[in-house]
Image 1 (tube, one colour):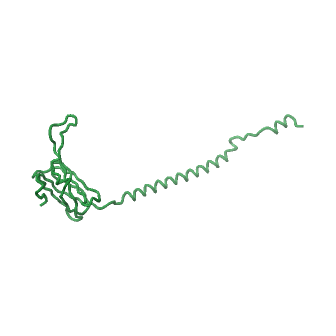
Image 2 (image 1 turned 90 degrees about the horizontal axis):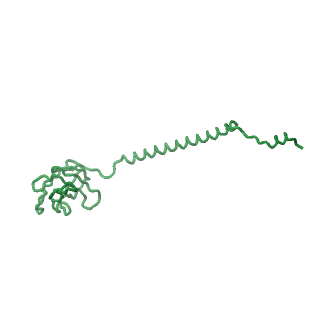
Image 3 (image 1 turned 180 degrees about the horizontal axis):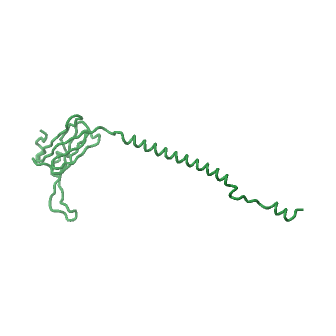
Length: 177
């Protein structure tokens, strides 16, 4: 039979101290640090590749080349103070190109070819609305120069694209001379 001292020695569990596990913890920590470092390197590489791809794709020219078109717009001999001018293709394909008319002058960028031209302008009419703090605006350019336009412009790649539009309140007179 076993003595009490032998029984206690036999059934006593030996608990390891944290110092004894240090080499194992260090090995696992090293493996995890290595894997995390590799993962972070892969993430940095992917981010760099993505930025490089965006730079390459985003910096190339898109669409057709555009050319400067400029000129003046008058209505019944007076400069159009403020308005809009739109150049679009006759077949409806492509993007319309628009510009502002200020003090009778306009300048915009448009693709080459024959364009359909619309001119829009409006003036203040009546008293100033106290809520909006502005007068009601009414278009004064006839529909023959915008919605039902017959105005044209030929935008060429070389040279100066200067096109003037002397508009009339009587659209039966051809405005383009």
